[in-house]
Amino acid sequence: MHFEYTEEHLAVRDAARDFAKSELLSGVIERDTEARFPYEQIKMMGELGFMGMMVDPKYNGGGMDTISYVIAMEEISKIDASASVSMSVNNSLVCWGLEKYGSEAQKEKYLKKLATGEVIGAFCLSEPEAGSDATSQKTTAEKSGDHYILNGTKNWITNGNTASVYLVIAQTNPEKGHKGISAFIVEKEWEGFVIGKKEDKLGIRGSDTHSLMFSDVKVPAENMIGEEGFGFRFAMETLNGGRIGIAAQALGIASGAYELALAYSKERKAFGKPISQHQAIQFKLADMATQIEAARLLVYKSAWLKDQGKDYSDASAMAKLYASEVAMNVTVEAIQVHGGYGYVKEYHVERLMRDAKITQIYEGTSEIQKIVISRSILS
Ligand code: CAA
Image (cartoon, rainbow, N blue to C red):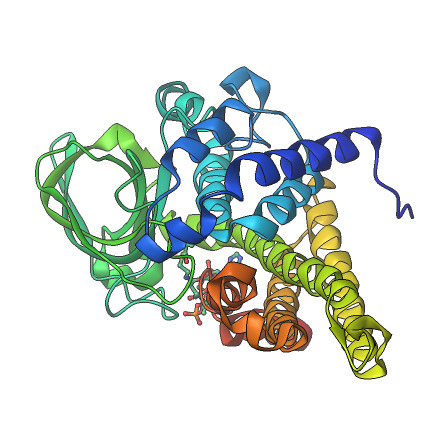
């Protein structure tokens, strides 16, 4: 058992850290206030290889392991969780799903561009009445000759307007329940595909979250991923890995807030000494550091299991469940350490607290993670 970073991991960490500090930090408050997507920065992240980190180099990816990916996710998320959710969806949900289950033609046509960030992808499972209960898909795809006709609405889609390539889950055979669900690759420009309203969110406000409407969209049969009926399994397996990315995002939000609180506590004086010299603050810092380290171990363990080709569905649910709780706890405490300054935008921690909340909701709420974990324990 090794608890040490490799040279490559340290290089990835330094590259992501430098990028986040030099390119994401300035402007992050304005983007949050104005709910503005970090277009330029995401383009640069593509050029630096952060948008397809684990994809095989033969499809233009970085060929890196999942540990490198979570290290980069943590560093980017410390500064800008809106940029990191875009990165996470592109890497974990879109590129991974296509590389693992796409046909060679699909990989050539779509994955190669997604892996470089030349185009951005979105993963479309949630619907107005199918969030946690993902088997209740109402979107339909009806076979018609060499096409499927797609109809329905998707909700809460990250990269909703920024994306050009959408992995869409839809019912192809309602009588079969979840075994009648299939997955398709859909292009933005196709007739009948309408980008709906942009959500005005509490946190990750720089990310681009939309509803999507499909009205008789003609999807070529060759754009189905896997075979008919494979879509639910595809979505579940993809989300198992996606949860590692969101756990890493939560870890980054927590460690970003902790680092700010630590630095502030050494500068801010009260009752004649830096507040870091008061035990009330020291205990908070100790609790934050301990929780973050425990979350990091869970995140790394789930990434390691994935890299070893072992089952990681429970480990990723545990990592996401715990890291997202830590993100909430730590960001709230970071505000407390900052006192009144923590409540204003300039000090970043209030944004990190707002960003933390979504990590307990998307890619499965905390309750969904507990369902996944408890079913495994009891099986
Ligand atoms: N991994 C692999 N397969 C799984 C799985 C997992 N984690 N969980 C379930 N499955 C499989 C089951 O084995 C079963 O397959 P078979 O019938 O072939 O045996 C099938 O899926 C159905 O499973 P269940 O009977 O357990 O279905 P359920 O309805 O009782 O519960 C659930 C399933 C775990 C609750 C699932 O619906 C779920 O994960 N819901 C949450 C969905 C979610 O995370 N949505 C997030 C949206 S994406 C997003 O947020 C992205 C973004 O933009 C940031």
